[in-house]
Image (cartoon, rainbow, N blue to C red):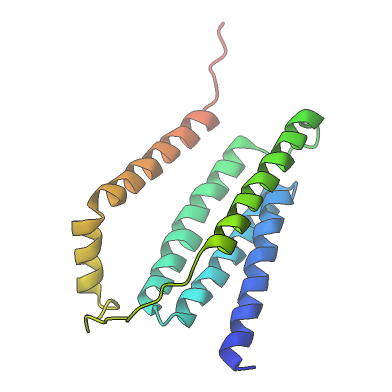
Length: 170
């Protein structure tokens, strides 16, 4: 086996295991730490694709800024309570059923998909350059780019409103 395949398999195992631990860990601080590890391993995948700029932007934006917001939200809301009410069994059962159905749909999609047969044409354009990346982001993907910024703004406002203490009436 080549070293790139070994690195890919190790990064994939780290990504999948930390993503699993992010969802199923009861402590929210540990869950956030597992999410950061998952983000770093995804950045490693970008490096394997020879997308250095995208890897470093991913580390700066997701592992840095977004996780700081998540941690502040967790700390402000004080989610680390042991006396929380557990979800009813029907909710957990519904989540397992919907996960299994979605997994079956993905598996059926992958099994029925066919490889693209044909000639691969290249344009010779360097998609690693910041100029081309900015042009693509702000020309072709302008609306989704703006939707993402509005979504982050709404999430920030929501976290502030959730953590806000109510005034006691006298």
